Length: 288
Image (tube, rainbow, N blue to C red; front, side, top):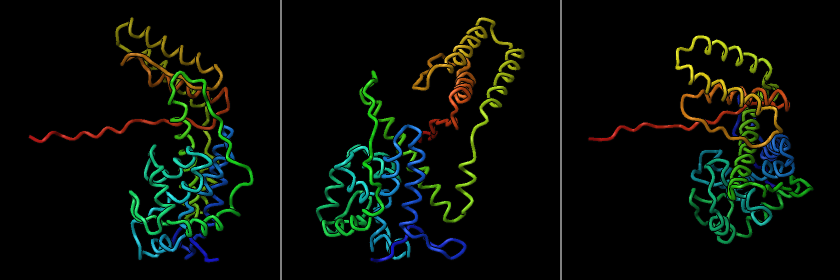
């Protein structure tokens, strides 16, 4: 069987074999997804995400003789009938989430040499998919990717939306870490050892909160509201892990309050990290 590669040469002149990258990403994605009891699903994602690189077309990309080759569709197509959700995650691991991928996947499976939204498919047509499956099957986990469905939300689409994003986060983190380790083999060791010192963070936040409260020249009634919001958030951190929302007007100290909640929640429930996601706002001046 032909040898396939995932990445070009590193500083030692070594090309990374595709099988090595898929196994490494599968192990990491499985480990990350184990945090919400979906280790097998994470492993499947890691093994299948770059399956399309097992193709002549994509190997040409690595050698800079091809371009605009879509390698993500192949893995998504393989898993689609088993799990639409996992297919969406694999399809999204470079270009972002797209809820409507069925037509694209079917086109790649049916017609050899066909084009998709992201250029030529690395794998297309029944014959190439059969060859790909022979290559990928020995790497796949023996257990099926079991997903834990949440049907207890008041928001109908919220569980799937968050579920997909959690799995995508696991896959992207694993993929980037595994790829970086090909160029610097200390990456995995250094990144895996980084865990939040929750007690130190919480103590510093309490100290900082006391400092700004003492120095505040704001209206006393506003400061009482800020104190109430802060205390409520700290108290809420003692509850069982789950989904929480914080709704309060501008100026009531939400930022420091939610950080205190997160730090104490980490401390109580032995969480490893606090991840903060902020919107990116781009100001484009109007043309006159």
